[in-house]
Length: 129
Image (tube, rainbow, N blue to C red; front, side, top):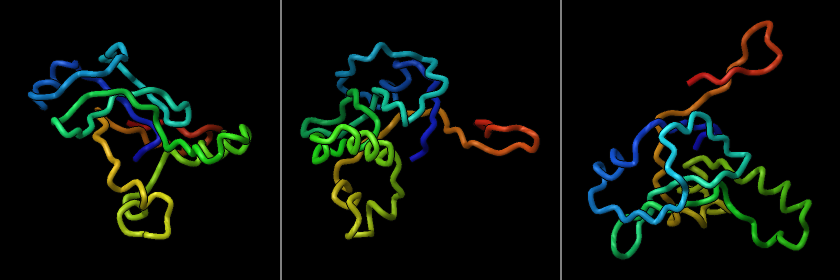
């Protein structure tokens, strides 16, 4: 998963792609989510499987380390590191904390991702779509 995504679509296109999709999302559907950044832990629409089919619902980006709730500083620090996981850590590495999440996955509608690249002479990396 990338840290920086973009969504340019209409809810009707998503409904057309998934005809029996139940809409439970409370987020005001914004067809122009130009730059959504993971470290802000935004709420974002996701498609998830339920017993009765697929549903569009809202979720906050990242894994919530509830076992650290008692220490707000540790919780905030750990949360920053829990927004991005490699598929091989989820599917193959049984020692990884991510492995426990392999059956709790969802579909995240995106139009594209940003990779940040360095340009000579610039101080900050530039997002490249």
